[in-house]
Image 1: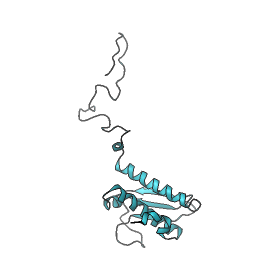
Image 2 (image 1 turned 90 degrees about the vertical axis):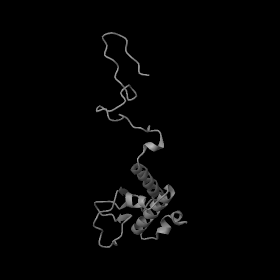
Image 3 (image 1 turned 45 degrees about the horizontal axis):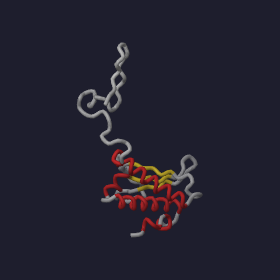
Image 4 (image 1 turned 180 degrees about the vertical axis):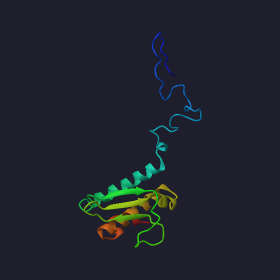
Length: 154
């Protein structure tokens, strides 16, 4: 219930997001989110994927703290249209970029190709872990199964 100011001469209290205004200023829709921020459905698919990659990347950097101290894990929507000369003509799921003097080593994970290959959230988590372990393994010159052995258990 919205309170009213009963004293004459005072301006009415400003309306909050739960006040009587139910539509946007053009009268088309709601002015606030349909799902409150404390509920899980409030987060977008992109935000959930970013968190998944961040968690998996953090777990792997804990496994190799000295060798991956400066590793950056990035998420992009789709790979570029022109693949690198050493990459095949298939869709790339991730890419490892070795470090230089100017830039630390980077691993790029592509969200859309990964999500289209998975049906459930557990499949997506396993595929993200596999892609990260493959890319980190290529940076460290070790087998992906040695980077994250649990990601390859089927």
